[in-house]
Length: 90
Image (cartoon, rainbow, N blue to C red; front, side, top):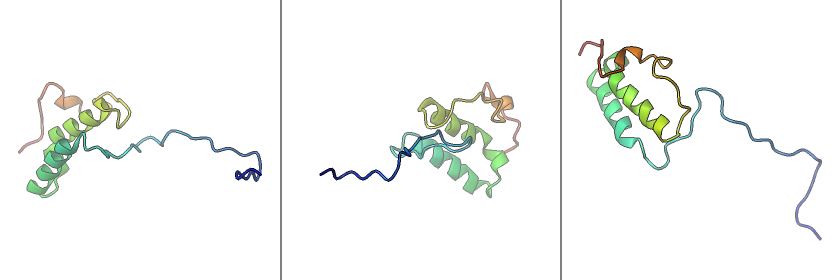
């Protein structure tokens, strides 16, 4: 007797996550970048505009490690930071 039960012919079809969803960093590969970003936010009263470099570095880490879809930095709103320049005033 088989232990598997079939209640129909439906099978699970996995699909990629929605745009903007990405896997958690279970191995902590980008933990130092995340902590640097969070510390910057804390030190700047959570004004994220003052922490754009840290945010960019964190997202770059995630993309390099395939924790999120590779996107051009310009498309993510960091076009002005390419080359290490920032217009945010600190």
